[in-house]
Image 1 (cartoon, rainbow over the protein chains, first blue to last red):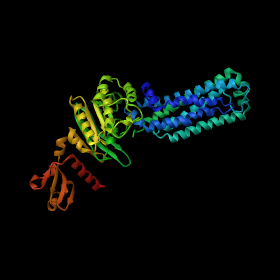
Image 2: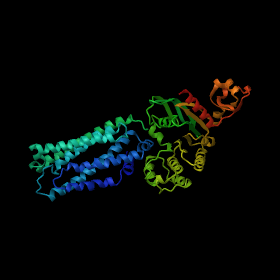
Image 3: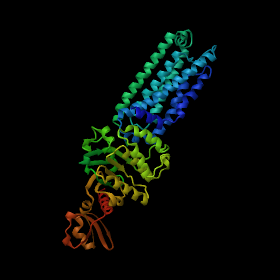
Image 4: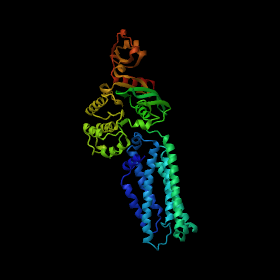
Length: 218
Length: 284
């Protein structure tokens, strides 16, 4: 699995996409922005290019000739995406620390980048994975429909969450108001987000593997 | 010992099917797998490699069942697809560096020596290689991980005559010790006249014949004669062509009576393919 992961990273992921989290993460410094958008650049820009690289270079046939199991093929591919997602979110979190200190008196209309907010980020990426992989592994080469469905689901969640955050005084207080100062509450929201991310990605992997087993390599 | 034992493969597609595909390749020999475009060569090869879901059939490689020992057997098989490129913008050295980690028996020294022998410069990108060089690179990789069975899908298509001849020499050298066996598919029959020991011929998803090369050709007779002679043998011919001089046609040697006085010769592989294709066309 480790060899396969290295192979997928080295051959499929242009170094540019490792730099992307650092470049796009800098958008966290825009004061009072809709910060969930920062994470969306991952699936808007990096993912389609990475899929195109794998497909354009006939990766499916190439990998099928190697002495590896189909289970490991799915695991490695999902891991590549998870690694990049974590990189995007962790780098954005670090930028977020600066944002909070740079603009201490900012009046946030959208979510402020406190700890709990990142829990929402994890849930958004978890939803993205949940739709992306199972749909992609129906064929293991058609990524368009999977991308559209996954982007739609994740983005709808993000905007619905943001809308609720504005409309509901409770949520507004929890994420931006006095609740944002309670580290315990914030940390538990983050932990819950991470747990949902792990659960969704795990379910996505299980379904993907089951589907990929039925796929014929043409 | 059999390097490859394919038994009763059946695979259905909406417009095509493999029907009871069976053939055997002895260890240490070269088998040419011939058939027209779309006859089922690649489908058979992908079935052997366990890439497709078959309705029925069994593939045994080096005595082991491929479906049960796929990962273990892939350590001992070298694959090359002549017409499909992988990671063309990467350097050979990059690809090798990644690929060698997958193989337990990787022999770096052997790899270096094959690079020298095939005159491959590791710093070149795949896209910069000629078609012949690409096949040689695949061979270098396969041989360096100790592959005992080479499965090559159309390795010579797209090669110029010199490169093809050169590659066929390499194939022959490889099997000399009796350890390595080669199955290669092609529609260029002259390649097989030169280097194959066995011929397996597939048409419309069915194996027409699989045997030792000379025996394969001796199974048939190419007849030529006048229009009146055609009437004597017409219903026994596999197919025939007529011209103003008379006819030429292919017949099973067993169906031919030499006393009939019709001129008969041993056909070339190409002639066998052409007349069989004509028969298929007649049925459509």
